[in-house]
Length: 356
Image: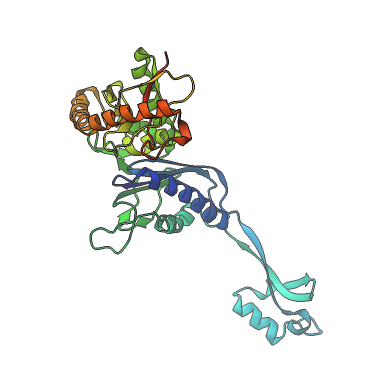
């Protein structure tokens, strides 16, 4: 049966997202394992404003047969086979009919006892108790408080979606009762979005300009960067850390071709990120291009005008950095120091390089 959880928040830093997803996966696996709930699959997803857990779980715990033992048989029964006061007291303490008592053989001898069937707890009840424990246990390098609550989290919480087998799980977290409703992109489609499972959740959010899978968003960004640079026969430095950061920092939405712009500086970042200088290229690269790829949060073509102010603002910041880099690159070429030998001034970022 399908389980779906979404914690809606304000924008969480990319490094916090990676940590939270690891903690969520470990937390749910432990809680469900301890509760004897079968887990066929479990995955964790995220956008800058959503932490998502989805899985295929058993309907509940399996019923168990439990053997309950009491006093030794020699004490619990008289020679004629009737129960002694000790035997009758055991039956009363367990609220069990005396006719159900029997001799139970153990390595230590025979005892008076009975077999009791224990019904398994439904998964929805297990989740109702486990969800607030797991979410409340998440830790981050820097945590904040808001409003009057002493609770601390990476960023303020805005909502909780929690459903199992198409029904809302009766749980709550920090004042938010679980529902089967979230919201779309906060600017392009801020209306309500209902979900009963991962498939309907994913489809409904994509219509509202939200792509919840970080790997899908990363591929969308990289494909558009490559398409934007293809006419120049150029590429970006393969910096996995930077490319992994982009889906966690820049997008809550489905990318459109208008999100990319080639400017005149040397970094690839989302428009709200800090500025960093690139490392030089090695090997077959002939030269670095003085360009920047700007990834902006543009949800539709009509919103493309939002790209212009960030580009202009970054140009004012990056132009002197670009000039510094040109001189710095010349020094590196003369001294033949590349790659890991580059000083910390060239910290990390993907410059545009021409392959011809």
